[in-house]
Image 1 (tube, helix red, strand yellow):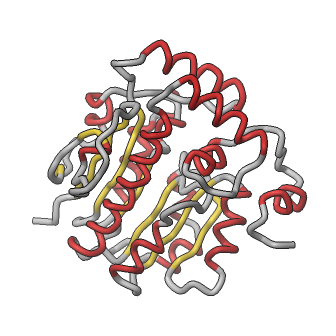
Image 2 (cartoon, rainbow, N blue to C red):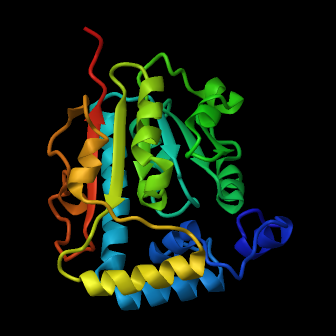
Length: 276
């Protein structure tokens, strides 16, 4: 079996239903990746047809992640990255971007989806300074106690915590702000939090509502858009790095970036203040 073949992986993992669309694999499809099934592609096409600015937002968010990782490693000297809710390996993986800037940088991927982790482990086989663990980011104490994570990362030293396009899958009942704070409390002073999050779209609210109803019905996964003000509440006590909390296409954009309308998605980089 080719470990990177999605159909073969589905047959080898009895808990996987390839007929049920999965958010990580739909995201991979929107980015032009190959680690997705027919059900994922069907759901992804319906969503893109319902919300015309969706795919542009997905690609802008992935580009934001790439710029963020480059900035953290190349400019800010970060050598440890914890990617929570990393999803299926796809276009522009964190470890590849980080290692171009610093081959010694360590990346730990965390995801609950067994297909995503199986693909990640296959991709990372033989790759130094990068590993993947299957865990539920909603339970920080379990993630942070994982032996593989603690072997790879030294949490007494600064680390970049990445929560890219994942917190909108966590309903308010799970207290996403508490989850964010738990990871921050475990990180050393000088650590960073980088996150992106979907927001209510002001230009196409009806289209967004229709898209989300179908997306949640087909995947069975909740989705909560949040305003910039709600996201800002999670950042209390942190140093917000320039340019602040802005739409992902406006966060340190590349000079030659194509400017096109995107479904409203916000991104930010924040730092835990150094100990006085």
